Image (tube, rainbow, N blue to C red; front, side):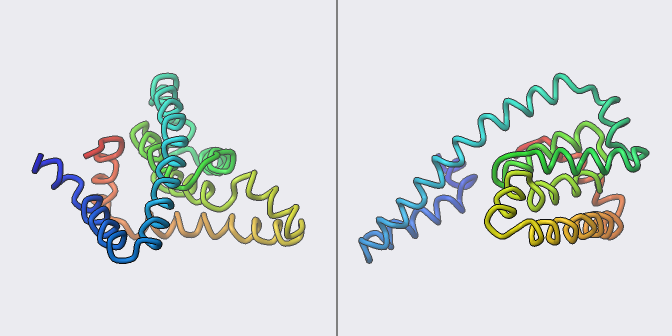
Length: 178
């Protein structure tokens, strides 16, 4: 039991704070628990399909194929594929991290994985369509055109700033939950 509490100490602390707020300020505490419950339900509706798709990706796509398509020597094809995969994805940003872990485990180039995460967070097709309908095509296209080099620049700079040891640590821990 103590090991379980240690493992989830942040969750336990937040739960205790929520209970203190509930006792001290009941209306705020009820609202806080309501928001927490809604977020939990949303997360539970997103995570299982992501893990099913991850399992399929892990089984169906050979490591050699992933290295060829998104590995160190993939060049423009790897960058384009990373953008496409990130832009075509659905779901909140936290769902991209397990996918990124599988991509790393399968041998994808580190900058391509960063491009994938950047595309997931800023260039998702449903988000672009919503922006076009609510803010106009000019705004959507301007933001999209600015984001593409921004994502690539961030990925390139991040990859160059990390040492080989740090990148190897990330690769070694990809896909292994602790």
